Length: 148
Image 1 (tube, one colour):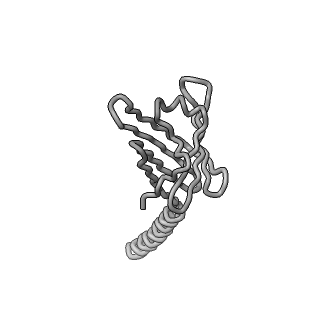
Image 2: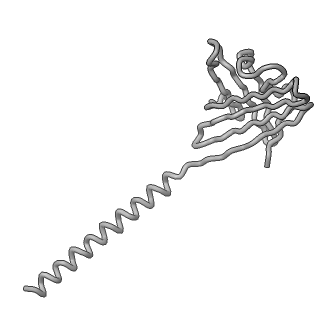
Image 3: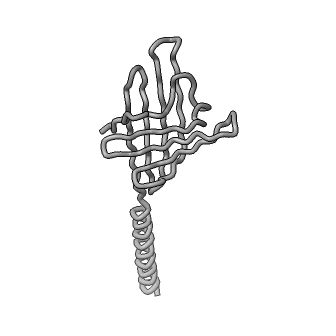
């Protein structure tokens, strides 16, 4: 009887280890299939005392944008501004960041056109609430160069 009981215990251990192997395999499979695609690109433009920086992060088809500008020609004219948030893809290689102003009932919209080597930014009138003086997010006709 003792010999039979020991044999039954060994069978249960073997069955248990198979279940553990299957659980481990399923866990690893879920981790591998759950990997997300993420990419971040930086763009910079130095122009007449202005430094514009744009950061675009894409995670599984969703975009987050951060834009900032600094101007320091003299202590009197110094200005700095930043804006960030989720952006929507409006067309191929075009993003739209829409941010509500906390001080007024208006929105700042940044239209971002991405290219293989750079990006251009256009801003709406409502962006005046996010920047002061000479600081503007818009790059005009100039392109922010992609940092590689």
